[in-house]
Length: 346
Ligand SMILES: [Ca+2]
Ligand SMILES: [Ca+2]
Ligand SMILES: [Ca+2]
Image (cartoon, rainbow, N blue to C red):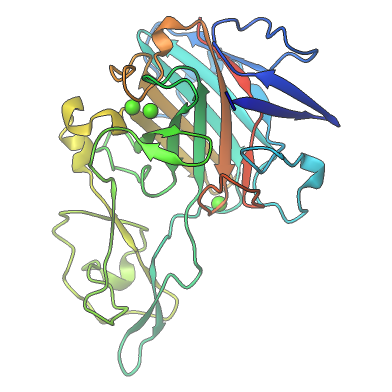
């Protein structure tokens, strides 16, 4: 198997074989013990709406270093990173198990709330409103949690929860009670594949006509509308207001489909959307807090998810980007990947 983890600790590269996942106390293969995030067993579900729910005070936080910027060897250590590297050098993790559900909370610094992929920007208002498309080549901030272990029939892949600051996490994507999802995926070492399900959370806002950079959908409040997404099916869409703009204003390049959760039934969302997310970016502290929750056994462990219900601990790694998609076959100064660490489930 090619599933090795390269944990960069000072100058030492510690080779850790990645198999199993239920011996959280000792890995037995090297001198350094992997960090642990010990889940707190809660007696009530953490709030689905409040990131500050005090139940999280009972869960101990573990700081996980973010030393690397490549997913696979040769891995680059922190000292080799460019000084221009954009992402935080650590993530603070907490975990809670309540009933049959795992909650994972990650907090990391990010100076920018990047949620404007493919936006339109007003570049002129006279003699008519002119837009440019995605002038900043922005993408969005992203978080990835990878689980080592058996996924369906395959043992050489990792289960993946992929959270994105706009397309899976927009507020009210999941109605008024949650902010959205992390997308269920599988990581084969070089790319991510979505779990079963064809529903899309984010839908691009297309140009109005061929050859035009004018957005098809905009808000009736035009100049007053400052949010970074629309809802599919919103009655305020497609009114085509062309007055009141000033240069530099933006129209969202994506719409989100809140029916993904409004329809509510798991058979509608399928395996692709069984990880729920509550998240926020704090403009004061410049910090993301993301809580992901998922059943320990999603019911898809025979195909594309790990079955956490049969494990005492699971070995994971996490990754973050700053306004970029993940790059899996080489380094990037806009992403960081942790070494392996444990989430102790009970
Ligand atoms: Ca950012
Ligand atoms: Ca799934
Ligand atoms: Ca999966």
